[in-house]
Length: 335
Image (cartoon, rainbow, N blue to C red; front, side, top):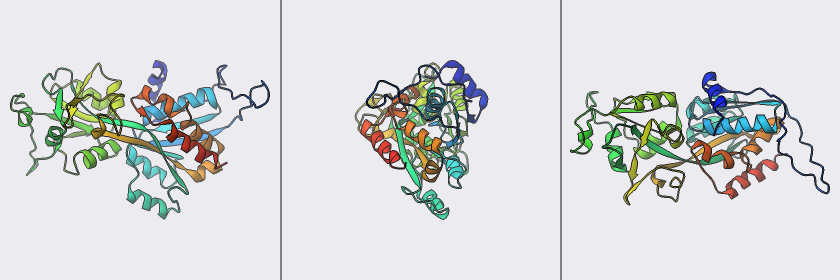
């Protein structure tokens, strides 16, 4: 997990994470040179790497960036933003960033926008799958009645019933034995891929309840739910995993018994598959060819010391080693 002082710095800096180079540490990893015992010389790189996008992916990418700048290339400044998946693509498409982090796959409409800028997927843009995330439903610690729900009940409560804007939902509307108190709904706003995944995949594009309070910052959502016994929210597993003292994760029954989201259950073939999704970063290959630091950081992301190593620390389930190895081979071919 992040060092406490690094986490404090990230919060203080707001939307952008950027550490200045501070000299190479003594424990910087070295690759042995072939045929002798002398360490191979690591090319010292300089310049910037600019990333923006998913707030869900942000802690993982920021952790990777911290490791890279501290122990691999102190002369490179990796700036990681968290504007949201959709907002990140709006910067990436016109070439304002080197990478776009996303908690959902790029849309056909965004691919068309790339084409309008002369950029083709696979030729000019590489999609890199980073890890698995589990969409997590969280409630207040004092809520002792809704700790387990079916996926249908979750859809029912979050789906709008409004006729003229009055969309009040009581807990007892979901189960008769639950309190006759109004449910307070929360979630990330439309800038985030998490919102789009929940709306499109989980709710099947049915309107969210009109009383839902949508926020840009995940830390705000954590605070709001932790302060209201009747609150419920959805976001990525990582933000729950770092706030288990404040929140309870709802166990979800997908038809075979209740499943608690965890790194042991999140995956496309595991028990929490119903709410599992991939998270991504998208690389501008033109920039990777032009700027050595961009290509080098991309290679670090997919190396055993990158996403594979730090995924679990940030609430994600890592992908199979073979998946990262394929990206490594493709990136090496760019040189």
